[in-house]
Every structure is written in C-alpha cells, then in structure tokens.
Image (cartoon, rainbow, N blue to C red):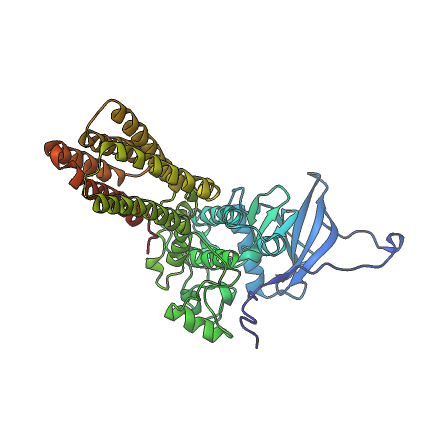
Length: 480
C-alpha cells in the first residue's frame, strides 16, 4: 500500500466524475424532473447518492440536487440525508453552502441546494500553487463557515479541502454536511432533538481517516474541537504540501497522531512561525489543549503578519547581525585609534565617526529595503534606528561647529536615541521604553562626570546598543 493510501476516502465520499454522453441532442429523451426541478446534467455519484445540476422553474435559478440512490433505502442513509438538510437549513452564512429545498420523489429523497460554480480548495491549491497569504485567506473563509456551524450547535465531522469550494466570485463555501451531528459540548442548540441521534453503528469510523481527530479514531463523540483538528490538518497540508502526521495505513496514522509525531517541515517551505504555532496547537492530541473555539483559532490565524514581531525571522536576524557588525567595526576603529595615538578621542573625530556610522547604516538600509517592504514591524524598527543615527550625525556636526566638548556630543547622542526609542515605544513596541530609560540614565552618568567622557564612550554606547538588540531579539522571537 502506498503512503496515506485509502485515507483520503470518507465513509460517504462523493466522487465528482462527469458523465460523458455521445448521443445527439435530438435523440435524447426529455429531461427528467424532480417536482419543479428540471435535471440538466449529472455531476457525480458516491456511496450515498448522486449529485446533479438542475433548473428551478419557479425561481428561475440553477441548483445542485443531491438525490439518494434508489437502492439506498437503508433507514440510516435516509436519516443522514435528512440530517444534512436540517443542518444546512439552520445555517445562513456566506461561507456555508445554502440549502433551498428538500423533498421526495418516487420514493427517493432529494435536496436542492446552492449551485456553486467553482473548484474545491484542493483543486484550487494544486492548480494555482498559491502563496501562504492566499491559502490563509481561503481557509479563513472556510473556518468562518465551520464557526457558524458550531455556533448553531453543529459539528461537521468530515472537514477537508475536498469539502470546501471556492466559487467564481472568490467566496469559499463549506459543503457536504452529511456527517454533521449535534455538538454535545454546545451549551444550547436550536437543532431538533432527532438530529442528535447517532446514526453510525458502534465501532464504525466516521469521517476521512487522514483528517480525523484522535477522538474520532477512538470512536468517541466528535465535537467542534474535532472539526478544529481536521481544519488544522487540511490547512497544514495546504501550506506544506503534505499532512502533519505520516502513516502508510490507518493503524499507523492513528499511532502517529496518538504519539504526537509530527513530520518535520519539508525543505524550502517557510511558513511564518506564528501560523505554524497556531496550527500545532489545533493539532494537539488532547481536545482540551486545542484552541478554546474555532473563533479563537481564526483570530490567531488572521493576525497581520507584517506587524507580527515574531514574523520574518530571517529578516530579523539579518538586520540584527548588520547592526552588530556596523557597531563592532566602529568601536574597533575607535579603540585602535586611541591605542595607536595614546590620546583620548576628540570631538572632531567623534563627528567624523558619526558620518561613517550614518553611511554604513544607510548602505545597510538600501541593501535590505526589498525585504523590509514585506514586513512592517521590522521596517519600523530599522527606520527608527536610521532616524536616530541621522539625528545623532547632524547633532555631532552642529555641536562640534559650536565648539561643544566631547561630553556634550555623547550626551546629545544618548538623549536623541532615547527620544527616538520613546516614540517607538508608543507606536511600535513597548520594549523600546527600556532603551529610552537606559539612554537617559547613561546621559546622566556622562553629565555627572564629563571629564571621563573619552573613557565612557565604549561603555555607554555598548550598553545602549546591547539594550536595543536584546529587546528586539527577545521580544520578537517565535513563540513556542
């Protein structure tokens, strides 16, 4: 058996295989009818019934007709068909396929529902190879549909990429609620009592094994948290191109899920850490360890990645490494010059050092600008530093021309950096307030002992820069 073979099949799967006809139109019999609906074409068939496109003569619109097989007079199948209709009838949400009517014709139950011109999320992903943001947006819509079902007291129990369609209008709809049941954890539900009846014989797996939660494998009742697990499996697969748990059989998959053995991310695929952590929590073996609700998961997934401090880890490391390299180079030059000359640093050299610092940081800003455009948080931090360096450079030039001593130049540097960090603390990140306080404190130290300014240079600048670097690195590291 090939890996994952047989685990894509739901217990009531519908295979959408177009029916090929090569008969002249003049020889075709009159189109079959189901009450007021004229059946136009067959979409596909599954173990439970067949799906057709039909025309509603009263409301003049196309609908999808789900017709229970003539041989499918099993009371369980009929009850499940009715349950799907009842479940959908109580949902009115743009991300859930809408049911229009339910009826019976010649002893067969049929359901008329919204006809969606589009493709499944799986087909869309395979055909267009979308990026992380596009995938996230589509699955957020599908997640809102599931959340609406949960709010109505329903659990889908078989969510996967094949059970959500993206229409020509770009809207995603969740469909195939044939396995839906009342969520036993819901505090209240407007759903009729007969919908809570378990229609599956004991010991039977319900759902698609590759996407089932651990409690479904254990034949325990499935609820909204089970849908959350299935949703995270499907979204993980959309992001990475493979499912989070490996297994060549249902038994092996069950063991991997129970043990929490997730696959390592495939090489070359980078998903923002915050999104990955959100998925991993939704994939927890214990339902209580998952997100409290689908809405909580969706809020985390919908975070603006451009303003997420933990986003773009490679960019963050590049920027911090650049700052360290520039600062270390400047400090090394100052130290070597002092050792070679045997004289303390003068105000004139301090001014020229500022020009060198500005040029180096400007070059670093230009080199990283394409990457900075993609992440607003780190762009704002680096721009704040550039503004601070520019202000310091101008201040050094003007104060030197005015004949100010070295201590005054250092104090001005520290205070200007403190002001820039204070603005950043208000608009970007609170950790910058710490750098503000450190800058003010160091300025007060230099002002108290101006005669020791040359000796204080390496110390005060090192402390201030380490404070900024530590705050940036620690508070923006990916959460575990």
